[in-house]
Amino acid sequence: GDSVTQMEGPVTLSEEAFLTINCTYTATGYPSLFWYVQYPGEGLQLLLKATKADDKGSNKGFEATYRKETTSFHLEKGSVQVSDSAVYFCALKNTGNQFYFGTGTSLTVIP
Amino acid sequence: DVKVTQSSRYLVKRTGEKVFLECVQDMDHENMFWYRQDPGLGLRLIYFSYDVKMKEKGDIPEGYSVSREKKERFSLILESASTNQTSMYLCASRYSGNGYEQYFGPGTRLTVT
Image (cartoon, rainbow over the protein chains, first blue to last red):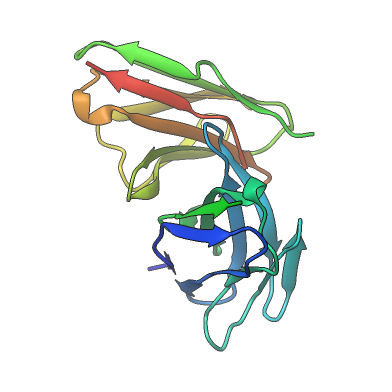
């Protein structure tokens, strides 16, 4: 069945460091892919998405490219800030109504 | 802006009580979802509804039921709360169709003692 595997955390970075959070998926066909962010004490918010192969989603300095050949959707940011400290979830949606989420990666950015 | 609201941010109930968690969305979304979130397990789907009065079981429906009498409201019911249902409960909604994202509420942290 469909599934998402993402890099386990926690991840701790210094401010202005480069961030990569790996996400790979298993799915038939052409799913849509998403990154969500959850700040402490809040629900999940959509960070970015890509709906077809080679699409690049971007928002708030974060980027991810839908790579069908490697079944990946890695999240990157060139220079992280303290305010980026949160839990990040990779997710996919295929032809049904159900979304499949990774287990989440906790990021802490220290000044 | 899409708004998904949940009836309580924090709830404490006793074992055996019947518990109602309410979720309301204001964007006329067809699909609504209930998840629970536990450390190390990510989000697990309990139930979802693809339209009014329609529901489907998710991955962990045991011990839960749902109700969707109106399009904007999706209720999660714990028939007889148990301590292993202590968790964060998240509601989400979306338009049906490919490519549409889910919008989440702020969550309800339920503690069953």
